[in-house]
Structures are given as C-alpha cells and as structure tokens.
Length: 142
Image (cartoon, rainbow, N blue to C red):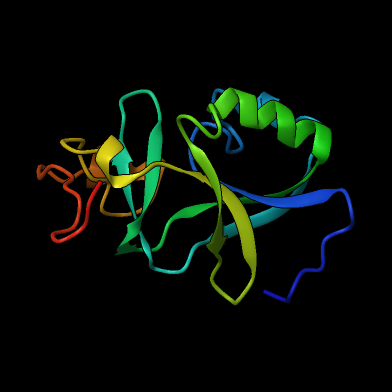
C-alpha cells in the first residue's frame, strides 16, 4: 500500500468491528471515503466483548478491517460513539505495507478474561474463537 499523505482535515481510520461494511454501526461512517480493505501488522490481539470486538496492542495477530478517510467533524462523532478516550483510546496502528492509520484500542487490563479471536477477524469469530481467555502479558502492569 503506498504511503498516504493526509489532507489537512482528514484522518485515515482503520475499522475492524461493527463499523465495517455490512455491520450494524457502519451507517456512522456515512460521508467518509472508503479507501479499501486492510490488515494491520501482526502486533495485536482481538477479543470478543459480546456485541462487538476490541483490539489490544500487545499481541502477534494481524487484524482484518477497512480503511476510511474521515473529516474532523465525523472523527469527533466517532470518538464520542467509541467513548474515546475513557473507554476506547484512538491510537496509531501500523497497516501492512507500511502505512499508518488511527484505530480504537483497549488496554490489556480492560479485556482480562475475554475470549480471544485468534483469526483477527470479527466476521470469523464464530468459527475461529479460542476457548482460552485473554490475559495481559506477563511482567506488564495493566
């Protein structure tokens, strides 16, 4: 994927759960430009929170999702929807091919005991869910 230089008021956003095309909250991205499918570099883990997933930046899984270019107004609306910064924290993530994007992540302490989705794909959760529970890495504070 080529290096992306943002326009002054656009943010490249990586979505991986209910904001994706065909998912229940996709309507919230109305007005955003769909860039295309993408995967993160293998630096994360995905957990199942029931009605939606979360990713944590302490794993070795590549996460499947989509990229959108969103303006400042829409980004502020999405921040409120995702509870940024008190619940999810919008952070930079590395996309395969060398690009960076923003995504909503949780901290390891927020997902203790939640089932892992080893495939890194929210859509494949039913077929690929692990029976092990997610734990923060050893030697790190939550």
